Structure formats: C-alpha cells, structure tokens
Length: 491
Image 1 (cartoon, rainbow, N blue to C red):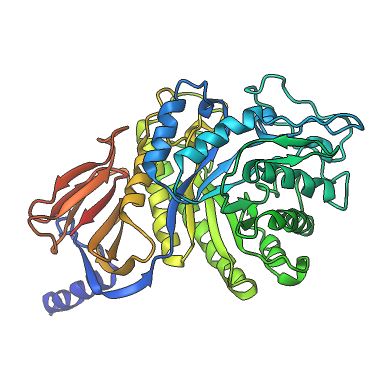
Image 2 (image 1 turned 90 degrees about the horizontal axis):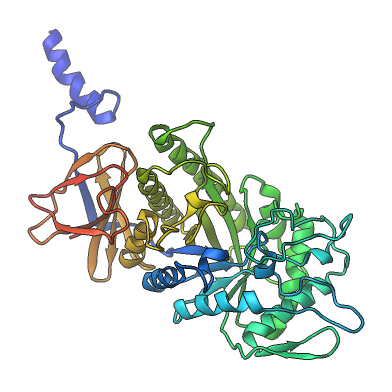
C-alpha cells in the first residue's frame, strides 16, 4: 500500500514544485512560437556621463567613441554632470552690466564626439547642472580652476534667486540655441556664434532632482514647465523627458508631475525617467552573496516600476517611460581594491534581467549606466576598461541585446525548468531567438529540444572577457551556460 501511495504522490509533488526534482533530471527550455504574450516596444541603450576619461585628450578617447559608434544605439543619454563644473556649465559666473561669461570650450568637444558617434540615431541630451549662482547660498560657491578636478559640493542651494524662473529658462534656451540654432544672443544683446545645428530629438530636464538641490515635486514641476515652455518655442519637434529621480520609492513625484492640472497651460507631459542601482546590503559582502542581493534588489525595483506604471497609465497614458540609469554601485565614486573579473559578468547579467522584465512591462527605453567610469568616478559602473577603453562584459551584453532584440518582436510563451536561469523566446519578422540569462555563479546545463543542426548560440560569459560575444553551433541541443552568462540562441 505504501509503495502504491508513493507512486501516486511523488509525481504530483514534483509537478507542483513542492518536492525537488532528482538532480539528474533534464533541464529543458522550449518556446511556443504561436503563443504571443506581449509585443516589445522596448529599446536597450546606455548612458554616457562627461568626465576626463572621455575627453579628446584622454588616452582612451578614441577607443571609447569607437565603442559607442559600434553599438549603433538609439536613445543614448548624454549628461554633462556637476562634479566637473567647467565641463558641465556654460556660464559659471553671473552677468554684470558690462560683461557676460559664456564659455563652451569644454562642453563643445565632447558634445561633438557624441553627436558624431551617434549619427543617424536619436539621442537624449541632458545638460543637468544649473549654474550655482542662480541659487540662494550663504556664500559664493567655489569650483576648481582645473576642469578635470572633481568637486562634489557644487550643487548648493534649495531656492532659486529668481523665483519667476525666467533666469533659469533663459539659460537653457541659450544653451539649446547654441547647439541647434548656430548661436544665441546673450543678456547684453551680443550674439555668440557656434556654428552648431544639431538635431536634438529628446531633451531631459535636470538630473536626479531628489538629490541635486533636494527639489520637491511642485518646484521641480514648475522648473520643468519654465524650461520646456522656452525650448518648445525653439523646437516644436523636440520631446521632453521629466522627473529623472534617483529613487523610485517616492510616489509623490509621479503623482504630482504626471497630473496635467499641476502643469502650465500648453505644457504636456511627453515622457518620464527614473533610475535604479543595486547595491551591497552591508560592508564586506562578496561575489557569492552579490548574486542574491543584487537580483533581489532589482526585483524589488521592478515591483515599484509596476506601481509607477499604474500611476502613469492613470494620469498621463500618452507619455513614454525611459528608465535610463541601470547598474550596480559597490561603494560610491571610490572603490578600494581590485574588482573581481566575474563581477562584470554578474553586472551584465543583472542588466539583461532588467531589460527582459522591463520589456515585458512595456517600458520604452532601458538604459545601462554608464559607458565610462574609473577611480574617482564610479569605476564599478563602467562598461569599458578605463585603462584601454575596451568594452567589458557589461558593454558586450548590451551589444548582444541591441543586435538581437528590437521593437516589434513578439515575446512568446517559454517553458523552462532550469533553476536560476531566466529564459524568453523572441519572434522577429524573420527570426526566432531565445534569450538565456544565468543569474547564478554556477554552470547550468540546458537541453533545447527545438534545436536543429544549424542552431547557433552567441554568448557573453567569464570566458569572453573584453572580447566580442562568443559564437558556437548548438550540438545535439545541449548548452552549457557559464556563471552569469548571457546568451542568445538563434533557431
């Protein structure tokens, strides 16, 4: 009797997942190409932040911008940023009755490299740092004379000296004209010629206002409206992106900004953005625990995205969403000691996981941060080796996703029993691909029953390093994924 009961109960427990399958059980992945779950509207992309290592004089400048061009990425987010005031602010001193102090020397050269490397692709430009003199401060805010020296204390003040915000809006209008209209007329009526006539399809208004100047939602919304109202007069075609908060756990930003009644007449919310970085839970964590901590924090972020998307659909269903800073931060700008080579693969797998899950949610743009980091500028977030400019696994994972997955692809029902491996079938107009993401620091053996003699796999893993994705033929439907591997199988 006992033997007969075991014959009945054991298969049932295995089927519903309450009893672990024997270790020798075959792990399989299959896709039902006739059952579409959702159609992708998502574009994978990246962020480039201005810093000395991307400058024309940098030893890695040429390799970095070649890497950027080779990506062929849409919606690159370019951000001149406050730790380097001379590279981020076009007017570092307030105008006097007889003189103005506009200087685009450092801003122009990197902007030109960005626009050349992304030619033919839409970009998102964000001159995020406002001149410090526009804010009420106890004393004049200093900045280094050396443009390449960092200062983390430039963004002082919580109140604008001009509450009408005309001064702020005029500043951004002149910067915008400099890059799109060939020049601008300054506060004293003098014309400054640039010769730039760039097309800027997307402009993001400020960066992380919840951190930079600690701007509350009503004030940020008023600043956004003032800036957008002026820039729309110059370019009706440009679309504007708002919010751009560092932390997505404050629903007030989204509830307030997305509500049309809180905006000036004539200002429509066109797009929003926000960020996420997974971080260690405590000092001293290692790669073995990162593999759990980082994905757990990413999944908690995804729950917030679902909540935010409900707010967006309720208040501004017409607007798009760019989640344009995604990555991992270990210990701030400075990282002491070496970074484990496998860390870069883990960080790449984390981005691939977020890309997949955000694609399922219908997020428009999913941006990896950032192309170039280095000691003093978040080295653990870099997508290239800051010593030679070669792409690291984070870069090559993004390249793999850009090359293989596109808007309009059908995400189909995908059945898998592989623990720790995310799987998803994508059906394109003339292709069938399966994305595989190993989220664990162990090998995974997989069988693809649908594989044929011509099935190929492209992969980024601990064996590919700073090289392009590896390629191989899938023999007998068998695949071995190395730890933190991201792979695309083409059927």
